[in-house]
Length: 424
Image 1 (cartoon, rainbow, N blue to C red):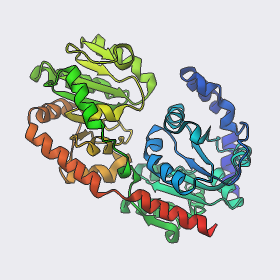
Image 2: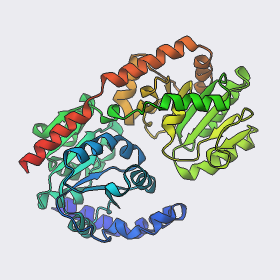
Image 3: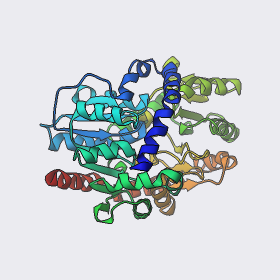
Image 4: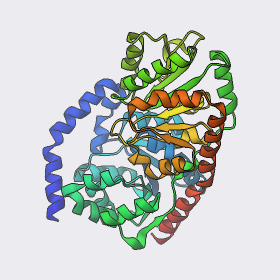
């Protein structure tokens, strides 16, 4: 009890800092500021019992969870669904995708009283935690109330394993309380065992991101966009970029323009607060710049098109010749490489891809992706693939093959969830 009590004391002592951070984020997201009480478990009770509760931290986890959420809706249409997120962008994505079909609320901070209020209100029959979000007090309270938890699509990088540091004993107790842990890969399973997962409750079920739906109309949407921009222009996309790599992307685009003067860069910053600074950087560096919000389309003179909206990446991947997936030139760990792969678009990533370690390795080994050593190599790599249509087609086909080969994880995760429900 002492380690968790000490952890809880530290969490309470940090509460003023938490409130300051919440207020700062609320300056960017007014709707988030208006819902700050939810982070402490205060919100009107929805008035139901026996809910299925799914926690997905942010946009990426929400997108990944979509096929699993839809499967749960079909299989348990009689049970209300609760979805929690931590970030306001995750909240926006939930509301856009599911609307009134689910009850959305922010996950409370890991304070005993906040956690208790949250559970008292949503009264879950089962909790599904996406991708190894381990909160000691939350897991402890669920275990005390006999609320079974499934950690679905679980992943754990070596960096994250080291990051637990002094709270590792707490993480061990927490993850051992889960009824089942469904790891994405053998490497993830090995690290989860090292963290302390119960080997009898751990299995390798694959990555449900491979089961993402790819609307049939996306390819035609991509062709329509290309027709508007100029059907023969080389187009590449830098998706989910972060501060620290956007200037590298613009430097790479300058190299691309020297080889292909009519080339178009689509750049989609990961976070909304980066939208305006990125558009400003494009203009300050002399690029003819358009934005999705201000201009809607990229005209024939546009050199950089800033995608300053959320939830539209797939349609722009479908309109691209090559995709650079961000968060990989800075120590973020990379983002979802499966979206371009699903559309047969060649993928380029930087050296930091620990968040998608197994997927990236598989794509690189099968020739569906190229991993560059540093930012200086980005421009030459993009030029290389834009100049070689045959290589792009081969690479895109291999990326799609990897995507298709790995599908089926949603069904396997659903089977594990059903077993837990039957036993509870």
